[in-house]
Amino acid sequence: ETITVQELANRMAARVPEVVKSLMKLGVMATATQTIDADTAELVVGEFGHKSKRVSEADIEIGLEGVQDRPEDLTPRPPVVTIMGHVDHGKTSLLDALRATNVAGGEAGGITQHIGAYQVTLESGAKMTFIDTPGHEAFTAMRARGASVTDIVVLVVAADDGVMPQTIEAIRHAKAANAPIIVAINKIDRPDANPTRVRTELLQYDIAVEEMGGETQDVEVSALKREGLDRLQEAILLQAELLDLKANTNRSAEGAVIEARLDRGRGPVATVLVQNGTLRQGDMVVAGTEQGRVRAMLDDQGKPVIAAGPSVPVEILGLSGVPSAGEAFVVVEDEGRAREIAEFRQRRQRDSSAAAGAAARGTLDQMLARIQAGEQKEVAVLIKADVQGSAEAIQATVQKLGNDEVRVRVLLAGVGQITESDIQLARASSAVVIAFNVRANAQARQLATREAVDIRYYSIIYQVADDIETLVKGKLAPVH
Ligand code: GDP
Image 1 (cartoon, rainbow, N blue to C red):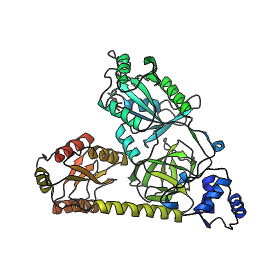
Image 2 (image 1 turned 135 degrees about the vertical axis):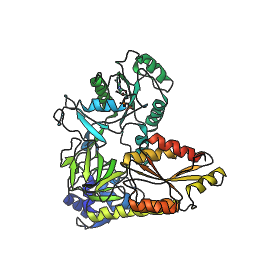
Image 3 (image 1 turned 120 degrees about the vertical axis):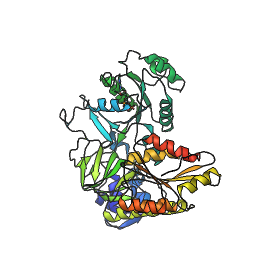
Image 4 (image 1 turned 45 degrees about the vertical axis):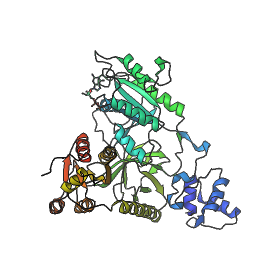
C-alpha cells in the first residue's frame, strides 16, 4: 500500500512542498515522485486536518475516497435529478420541456446534444442537472455498479392515468437508493385530469404529499403546455437545499460514467458526471477498466470546454475504450498510474468472467431441448447494443426473467457491432446473441452460421424481454 507524495498532495488539494515539509517533521525524506506507505500517508493526512479512510484492494483502489474533504473546502453544488415514472406518463416530454428553460448558452433553435445528461441554468442563476435517460432500468443498472449519481427523483404521474405498475417500481427504486422524491403530476391540461386521485393513490405506497399531511412535495405540471415547470424547479431547489449538497471544486475530479459509446470518427466517447473536484482537459483519467488523457471535453450544447466542476456533465474524448455506464472515473497523476489501475481492474474482470464462462456447449435447439427436459438450468445471453445505456437496460431486464428452475446469465453487455470474438464467446457458453440496433459483421455472420450460434436482432427492449422469457420457459419456436 503506497502512494506518491504528488498524488497525496493532489488528493488533499495541498501543495507538494507543504506535504514534503510535513513528511520531514515525521522524519521521512521524500520528493514529489517518491512513494510513501499508507501508514505514513495517514499521518500526513491527519496533519492537514483531513480524515482518511482506508480502502480495500490496497492503494490500487484508493480512489478519491481515500481522502475526505474538510468542511471549509466545500461549497454548494447543483442537484442531480433523475426523472422516473410509468411509460407514456411524460418523462421524455418533461425532460424536453425542462431543457428548454435553460437561459445559459444555446441560442434559441440551437443544436442540443444528447449526451445522457444536461444542465439547466435558471434566470436566478441557480443550476440543476438532469440525467437524460428516463426510466428506472438505467437508474438500476447504474446503482448496480455502485454509482449513486441521483440526488433527487422526480416521479412523473399522469393525472389522467394515476399510479401504474412502473410508478410503483420507480418508487421502490427511489426508496432503495434513499433518494427523496418530488411528485410531478403531469398532463394537468387534460380534461380528464384528476390530480387528487393521484395524491390519494400515492398514499398506498407511503408517499404522502403535503396536501395529504405528508412532507413529499408535489407539483402539477403540463409538459405539453410547459406549465408548472418553474414551480417544479423551485421544488427541486428547495429539496436540494434541505439535502445540503456540497463539493470541493479545488481538487482533482471524481465522478461516474453516465453513458459511453464508440464513435466512428472520434473513438470512445464517454459522458461523465463530475461529482467532486474539477475535471480539466489534459487530465489523466481512469474510468472502469479504461484509461486515457482527456483530449477534448464537450458540454451538453456540444461546445468545447476546458474545465467542468461538480454536477456538470461533459462528454470526454481520449479514453482507451468504452467504459460501462455507472462506472466510477477518477483523475490520477500520470499515465503509469492510470495504466496500473486499469490493468488491475481488467485482470480482475477477466478472472471473474473466466470463472463464469465454463458452461456446456450446444445449439439453441439443444438448449431448448435441455430446458424442456429440465436438464439445463440457465439461459446464457450476450448483449451488444448501439449505446451503453441500452445494453445496461437490457441486461437489467433479462436478468430479472430467471425463475426457480432456469437462471438467466449475461456473459457480456457491450457496445458496438457483433464481431467474431462475440460469436466465439457465445459459442463457448451456448449463449444467444442479442443484437440491439447493431449488426453483425460479415465474418461474425459466417462464423455464427457455421457454429449454429443464434443471433437475434431487436430494436425494442420489451421484445427482447418477451423472447428471453419464452426461452426461459422452454417454449421458444424453432429459429430459422
Ligand atoms: P414517457 O414514455 O414517459 O417518456 O412519455 P412521453 O414523454 O413520450 O409522453 C407520452 C405521451 O404523452 C406523448 O404523446 C406526449 O405528447 C403526451 N404528453 C406528455 N406530457 C403531456 C402533457 O403534459 N399533457 C398532455 N396532454 N399530453 C402529454
